[in-house]
Image: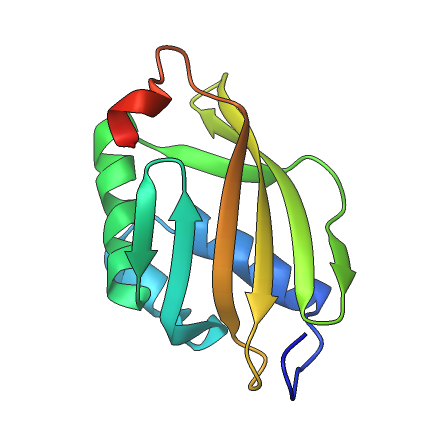
Amino acid sequence: MTEQTVPLTADTVERYVRFWNRATTEQRHSDDEIFASDVVYIAPIGVLTGTEALAGFAAQFGGHVGAYELRPRTQPDVHHDRARLQWELRVGDASFAEGTDVLTTDSDGRIQSIATFLDRAPDGFNLQAHE
C-alpha cells in the first residue's frame, strides 16, 4: 500500500462505470475528477497514460462497436485503496465481452491505475495482435 492512501469507495466504482457509459468524449471529461491526471490503464490491448488517452480510447472503442454499456456482474469488492470490478460489456442486446478491472487510488482518492483482465474476450479477439 502507498504511504497515504484514501480508501476507495463504492461511489468511486459507480462513477468509474458511469465514465465508461457516457455517450461522448465531452461527457467523459465531466468525470475527470475521479481520475488522477496521470492515471495508468493497463489492458491486453496496451498501456495508456493520462485522462486524455483514457477518454480517447473509450471514444475510439465506441466508434468501432457502436453504442455499448458496461455493466457490473457482481457487487465490487472494495478494500483500502483497491477495488475489483467484474463487468460485462454489452453491445446492443448482445454480450460482447466479460472482464475484471482492478482499480487503485492515489492519496487524493482519485483512481490512479486500472488493470483490466479479459475473462471472456470478444469473438475473434487476437491477443497476439496487441502484444
